[in-house]
Length: 114
Image 1 (cartoon, rainbow, N blue to C red):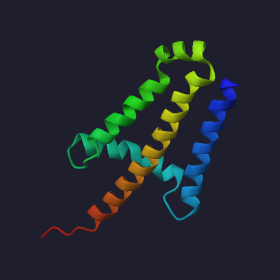
Image 2 (image 1 turned 180 degrees about the vertical axis):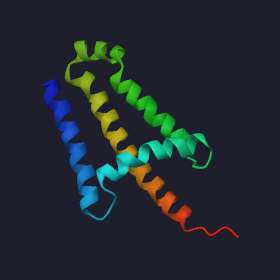
Image 3 (image 1 turned 45 degrees about the vertical axis):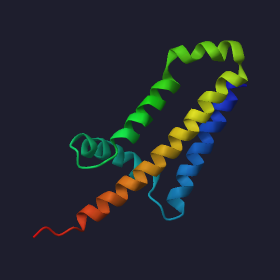
Image 4 (image 1 turned 30 degrees about the horizontal axis):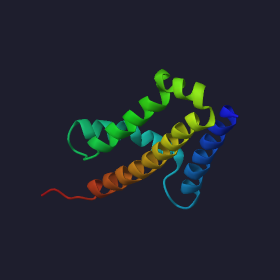
């Protein structure tokens, strides 16, 4: 059941990302390609996504952490619920932040420096 729950959350997130591209938003490949540029612009101080990137990194570390296996062993489905919530939040945060970053890039490219 645990694998089914994780698969369901993963497929739901993937479907949302793919639908965003189908509705006129950036495609999933465009979003994934933007992540390294977003990280680089943030570290250079050009883009203000530092705290959001830190929160996404912390969420990724939390989901991948082996320490999180302990509650899952004893609480079963309830132990997986926190992972499902974290993965859903992380997917939404990545989708929102990459869209925000891509918009920032478009606006920055249109600025004329005199």
